Image (tube, rainbow, N blue to C red; front, side, top):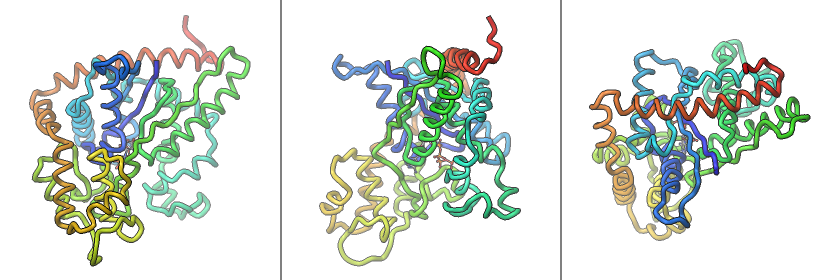
Length: 361
Ligand code: AQP
């Protein structure tokens, strides 16, 4: 059996980047589990959830936060995740996440954490900034939770002892850190045990590595971007999708279409999106070659229609789930929490034994 685990932050309705980078893969893995032919069927144990503890690093009104969790959960159901085939749960419902984070903090080096790029992005200092270079204001802005975010993420993953973690490219650094912590933990506490406490999870990287913002194509598409036109939500209506793509920032370069993420980030992002929504096996350069006589307007129209086709039906399902109150969300959560709790409890028994904490009979 392959255990596959991943979380998404409930910081807003998932966007096309989340979908192409991770969520579509979650659904495919689920479908593999019940594929009609034996040859295509895989014995996947799927555990997916909302990283609502992580979302606390983003300051939000409590009602907005609650609503965001509800909307994100409904989005997962709407895109076809089935609680009977994929365990769906909230991170904050499983207390072991915080417990394991504290234990792993004892093998997490602040030097490694200080080199991670996410906290730098979030407080708006350059990728190469070091802790020593931070001024008083930046230090005030950098809360412990943001700095230690990757340790909680490592705890999230290791708690379920997965073989694979399907995530987008922006999470690669964090999964590598998780593997490092697993190694450090095993060598610090489990060397004399029959088996290491943690296995080293592998990243399952989607080919859609990094979908960029439609308005600032040098930045990745993000839920927390204040500009709603920067992203396509998986629940956007067809006309909203067409409108946002029409407004997407491109350039005024004359001549044929070219794929050049450095010089033409907006156009290249649209070509990238087109490649992934159509699941094309061609390279972006080949796709561009075929479209070279297409105008920018026609390219946008083509991209918009392919996205509309890809997301077809999600909005209707989402609206129905939201209109029905919390019943469907709640029953899915009960099922998923049960699975997650059993797995997390089991891992923590091994962890407690390894470090020498009291293990109740
Ligand atoms: N732009 C993207 N392109 C490809 N994949 C992406 N992912 C996120 N953005 C892109 C992948 O989506 C999964 C869930 O992401 P997350 O919500 O847990 O965290 P995030 O990377 O911080 O996503 P956002 O949208 O940018 O959220 P905020 O604004 O709240 O920080 C992950 O597997 C991620 O790789």
